[in-house]
Image (cartoon, rainbow over all chains, first blue to last red):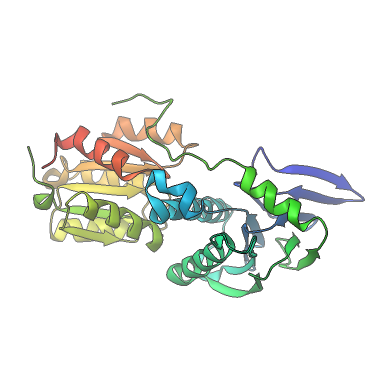
Length: 192
Length: 129
């Protein structure tokens, strides 16, 4: 699990809220992973044989934001990193790549006239799964509305709700979150 | 100063997308002799068949992981001095320290920039041309 996942428990069910830039995994059938998405994408991935699953939540920096750090290609690294963290956590819990099933959500179009970050996120996620040979079982990508997504990682059940009125706030909150800086060096470990 | 184009590099990662990103970064730095493998076992097989100068390897992989690959290379005479850069996540500090004990030359924290990739390679080989 991850420190930024917000947890709450009621009547035996455990809810974990997966915030932007983070992920969570579980093998507990009572756990529900939830998130709210605008342009961001969440990949809900599980191994039905191992009985484990997880969700991430990422936003590729748009071209304008990413330009100072190398443009769109550089931006892809954040998506790759997010997917890798989720998949590695699942592998550590016994999942096998060839058994993985994924559902993708989010990637909504935000504001007319600006670059369609949601489309970039959605296209990246689809390309990633295809390149890695992970089965895409469904989901809901693109569109123009923010979504609330709930995922039960063991059963694979997913519930999605469109957010009409508060949707604009979701998009604005996503954009307000600072773009993470790439690791320019090891930072805390000076071994060489 | 070594020429990047003359350095043969093996990129090892179980994710094709990550291998592709590393390859693209290497190509931007002038490397052209680049081979890939999806896990340590396949990388070792290829390296024993045709040696490389530099291995850039992920840690988490099926079959033989990055540490196993490093250990295998270091314990085999002809490959014992092959330069080895480990790809790692921020949370893998203990693994990095273990890799250092096994003789890793350097490591890269993901996600990394092309400039950082260059810096790490130059820390091993010296200034590239």
